[in-house]
Length: 146
Length: 401
Image 1: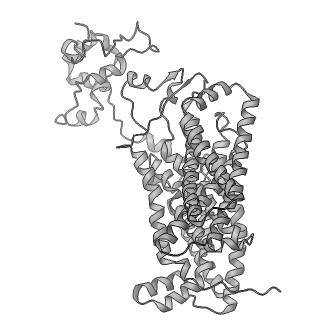
Image 2: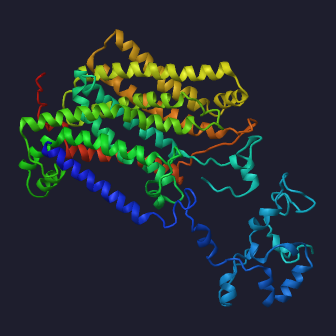
Image 3: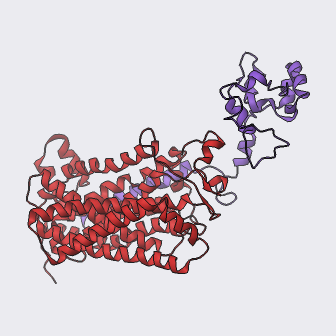
């Protein structure tokens, strides 16, 4: 066999060897346990810390706001829908939750949408309805109807 | 993919009825670049093989140039895909944990085969003797670099050159079906999507293949003229005329196949036909009729056809070839555009359209697409400096047994 072919075969052998080593090292442990998936995936995801703590946890401290909210239309909404995940704030009260005041958040649900039921979710035309005003000037998000 | 802020903004993009998940195009301009660049690779390689396997001697001056062009575009071919991924750093997983029943997941292997076994090997055998010679002439780092490129084989005997020649020939023969595989595969990705009537046709791989050959040949023609001009050398008009002749032939085949596909679609006129008719006459009018067919096919076919009968002066012919190569490159780009973007513009309900606007400034897809089209030219400039075809030793004659 000519020398250059031998050398080339050696290079290819090294390349394939590296690929096999990489495949061995990088393949996740439980790969192909159930078809082309990682068998451990569900366990790994389940073992992650929960980011959302549910409104009952919020009510432990913020009982006055929880009471106001329980009388309003937003009674069934989780606090964290507007305020973001609360797991850090529950552990450390100095960690501030976000208080979003822009209209876009409200309009995610309340903009005019032919596909959503008007008798359940109140809808407004964001262009005509008090343009330029912030929603929270008139509506208290914890108890939306004045 | 732009984020849509509100329903009002979303509705400005919609005509008629569409499903919510059809509003934003998931495959943007980067996915247009992917078949385009891959096609240029396959086309440039086929042009090289015309010289080597089919022994068309007039194409000899462009042989190495075609191979190096194919290599420089090949090195970038995956980049539009990788930069389009949401998690670009996970791209290697498709090689590590292969999914053999998915056509898309198999691309890594098709690509690796073509790059490692076809292009690199062919160029290596082609340049091995010259790299040995250059490693002797150069000093310092370049000497070491050329030596490393030859894998420290310094054999320059006629026997070793004959071996190189024979193996190189064999690789080119293997390379032709591989080039067909590479680009036929890209066509298959689209052609096999049965839910999309604009894509789903068995003709798709063949159409992609021939349009790839057309674009690759036009690209090499363009680069050959520019490189010769920059080197202040005389253009081999015989080579250029021959390239133009093959461009003409393959353009005819390509146009025939695409027409056949469309005529078939028009005559069949199945339930998707009405929406496709509105699509082609409306949103795709400019890109389809004017750019793809007008600029990309009619003008080159008419001009090249004319040149088959009457040959104007060399200066005029050069200018014509230069313009035609650009026309073809632009036309094929719009062909990819019409396939990739056009296929996502209409609703699968067949009752409406969404729209796609290219942000010329600030759109990451356009900037990246442009980048991935420009980078191969820099790679090619480097390769031409490293492995100049014009400094190669003349090929060794193999006596017939």
